Structures are given as structure tokens and as C-alpha cells.
Amino acid sequence: MQQEIDNIAVQIQEKPIAEAIRQLTELFPGQVAFSTSFGHEDQVISDIIFKNRLPVRVFTLDTGRMFEETYQTFYETQGKYKQNIEVYFPDKASVEKLVTEKGPYSFYESVENRKQCCFIRKIEPLKRALQGVKIWITGLRGGQSENRQHMHNLEWDEGNQLIKYNPLITWTLEEVEQYIDKNRVPYNKLYNKGFKSIGCAPCTRAIEPGEDLRAGRWWWEVSHKECGLHESSSSEIPNGASSSIVK
Image (cartoon, rainbow, N blue to C red; front, side, top):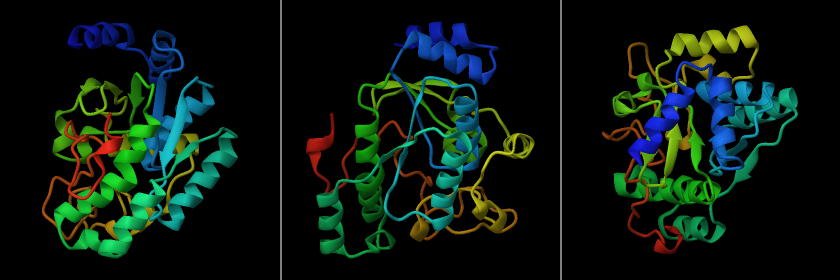
């Protein structure tokens, strides 16, 4: 597998992102997808895909607990580019069972509970969204967290059994912001209020000057500040989640 990744890397190296993505769609027709959460980095990639009419399936995970500003960004993005963004919701029965048994804020009580909620609302829908996908494009940047500093432009995702392409992995936040400003890309207005990493509303707060960019995510716990979407162990099942959805 590493040899295949190396071969692909040779074909797209030094190419602008739009050309690199087009090359990937030619190598894997109908099997390239991009996941957006409407954050700054994702909006840059959406702009590149939509402006260049690249044949990439774009999707988002609606956890049911998103900020109103995030939905507004979704709306503005559709309005600007006139392109579809597929929406994946969590399994209804799993959410009902979780909230019935543990209440609406169980994720505050323990890391295990929080990961169970993330699994139901994010990871299981992601696995459905990635079925049949060979190349998963993400908006990850190395500067977002210590864990992401060790990620590469192209890498194998063991949990999802596909190749992950991170075109912005070496970009700085300043470069992302400059791109958004120059190209007039719609962005989440929570960034103007001190939010630098935006997830579910109950689990995200603005950060203080000098804090890590992901300090506002799950601020009440000490963890790697990841929900499991971009960890090699993302296929592991927290207690209380059904094993039937893991492929």
C-alpha cells in the first residue's frame, strides 16, 4: 500500500491543489470524496472543488448539535456555488437510545461518554459516507494540533481502509485566512468571535489569546482533542455502541 501511495504522490507532487485533485479523480473516477464541516480550511477546499467543477462528491456530517452559524455557512456556500453538498445524519435509533439512557449532556460526564456520542453522531455516519471511496480529501492542517503535525499530504487511513489526501497539511492559518479573504469565500462568522475550531455547539467554546487552536474543543477534559474521525483507531467501538456498523 505504501508503494501505491508513493506512486500517487509522485504524480501529484508540485501540482496546484486543483490539478492534484483532478489527477486523483482521473486515477479513481467516482471514488474521490471530500468531507466538510464548514470550517476555514474546509471552505478553502470547497472553493477549489466547486470553482473548478472537479468531479468530487462533497458531503457533511450533521450531528444534530451544530451551531446556527454553521448552518448559515452551509446555506451561503450552496448559494454561492450552486452545488450539492450531501448530508449524513446519525442513526435515529442510536441517538434516541443514547439520550434516553444517558440524557442530553452525557458527554460532560466522562471521556468514554463523549467518545460514545462522537461515535454515534460522527464516526458511524462517516463510515456510511465513505463507502466505496478510495480517496478521502480532508481540510486537516498540521498546525491545528500536535497529533496532526505528524500527518502527511497523502497517507493510509487504516480505520477506514482508504487513502487520505490532506492538501492543506502544510498551510498556516494565515495562508488560509488570506485565501478566504482574497477569494471572498463564505466563512463561519464564529471565527470573528474567537472560535478557531468549530464542532458541536455544546462541545465548543471560543479560545483565549495564546491558547491552542483546539483548546475550545471538549475544553472540560484533558485529551488529544480529537473525536476519532482522523485517528487510525477510529473504527474502535466505545462501550454502548453497536458493533454491527463497523465494516
